[in-house]
Length: 316
Ligand code: CP
View (tube, rainbow, N blue to C red):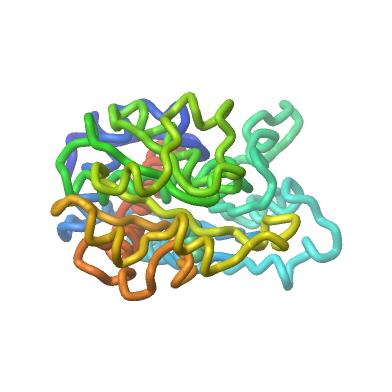
């Protein structure tokens, strides 16, 4: 159990872009503590949370719910499809309703980039008073994915500085790529990008790392981070050829054999098997896919606890 003064306190948790590295380190340490069987605090009063997922999710949604239950929170079910969102209620009014009936923490996934900004910049007359935890906004941020990725890398290498990390694939649409490149650069990793060049915007990604064709970087990388091809966000799929994509930009068995002995493969999921990587490699020795998902629960416990601390919930 960390000393009281080491407890992370945050009012909301929406982005890793400016998250101080000291806080990142404390959150990863706390997540490891939970992973190693450390017990969560015993809250003196109930803490009520709701998960609002306006985009489909398996990992993030279930993992946040698992984290909430492990922390002893009371989870109020919310399904946008059967909620008054369908009658046109806005996100703010939905949160006002949940907050008014006692929800203190809202975990939100939303298709709109920065949906959370107006919720953090309230007018004095607005009565919303609940912690926002961003579970992914459009192509913007995915802070819990980023922290679980950092935990997975830290477990493998023990450090970030100097690691060569390739982020490969559908960069344009990827909140995972954005969150990870922002955090990894500040942590001292050497970032590379690969995949189709029409998904690599040099003006944005060039500030974080160099673009190289996959075959020029695969042998040197410590981490090969593959991104899901986000078909649902593409305007047109006319040019998309699964076999051609896999051969040119995917992790084939041949490329896998060229990776360094201690290099690892990561993928945020869900995986398009046979596209981003050969289906047989999903559970190959170098793959950390399942470990990433396992780590997600413990990282999310640490994130939720930080907001509970920051808002002095649970009678602590
Ligand atoms: N990695 C991730 O966000 O997966 P889900 O969309 O299943 O939550």
